[in-house]
Length: 133
Image (tube, rainbow, N blue to C red; front, top):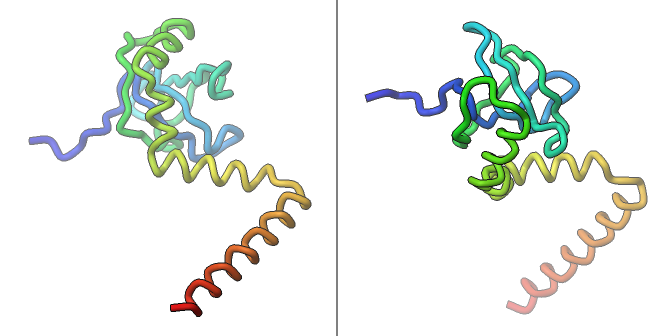
């Protein structure tokens, strides 16, 4: 019985943990050697272009698309859409957490102000409800 279930293999969905694409999702397309793999977004979907990357900078997920080694972008895109892998990924707690982090990073000063006001209102309502009991 194997302990590991997330293997570095073509079609494996991964999150980039370091570099200019940190926090983005990509798919392992090909294996170069023990330490390096070729990843692709596809760039039209996730914003990650096809490039070589050390395995050390990837966090593997549980999701895997059925693609051959070195698959073209078109093949990869079709496989991801057919199995709705990116949709399943965005429904996981890990995916939601990354999305929330990205949303917070893109907030303007006014957005942060509106959030603060909303939190204050919610807090006041919660306190009021707890006071009644």
